Image 1 (tube, rainbow, N blue to C red):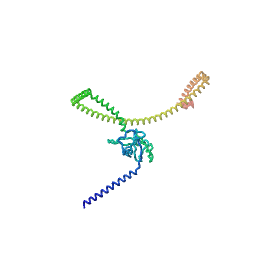
Image 2 (image 1 turned 90 degrees about the vertical axis):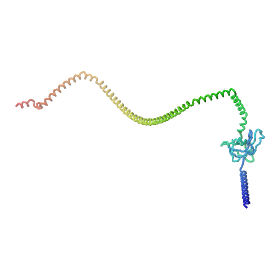
Image 3 (image 1 turned 45 degrees about the horizontal axis):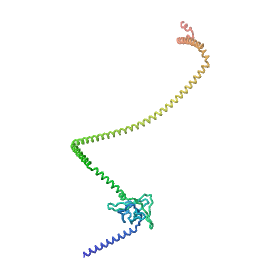
Image 4 (image 1 turned 180 degrees about the vertical axis):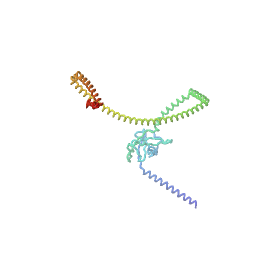
Length: 342
């Protein structure tokens, strides 16, 4: 009973698995049937070896369809017509370009379509009309095959030159060079201690250079600080000089104004003196005769008048002295003394 139950379970499991597989196949077929495709013609002028029906068609590296047909162009036998079937939503533009690319190392090829520029119009496929054409360009494979003879020729020339290099004469020179190198290596090995001493000295020199560099960096930092202080001092000096300049300009302007006022007063006074001098000069010119007469006669009379005035002043002085000594004598004469004698 247990064996029959196991077989029954296995049979049920297999039926469910087959049903699921059939359902998946039907769903995939329906999805594939519901998807809309567009057909495009591509004409290649080079060989399409490695490309077959059902081969991949990629748009910027993404698979978007497959090759539906490969045929010779009957109007131009130098070209090969490749009909591709790709998803209708693929943005094939007017400047899109198709080329053949190798697929790994298998030798198979696929069709690669570039995206084109954004502003280029979209090429639409319409059912019932001839498929639109996608421009093509030579593939890298064709370019490589076209340059194969040139590459072979250059390879042959390279081999000839290589054979000339490895000739007997050059071999002798190479052996001599190797011998010299071996001799130089031995001499360097003999100079091992000296080289070590030089290396140690170089290490010490490097350390000294590092210390000097550190000192230079510290000095540079101090110089930068001094430069910053100097810059601040210069800024303060500029501010002070600006204030002094403003003060000096104010004082100088005030002094200039005062000097101008003084000069104006001097000029006014000079004009007054000039006017007075002109008046005196005119007065002298008008009375020159009288002045000359005064100088000749009047001056002598003035001199005599002054002499008489001096004598009068002397007499007055004597009189004043007598009054100080005896005032009554001036009033009563010599009677007062007689009364005293009585």
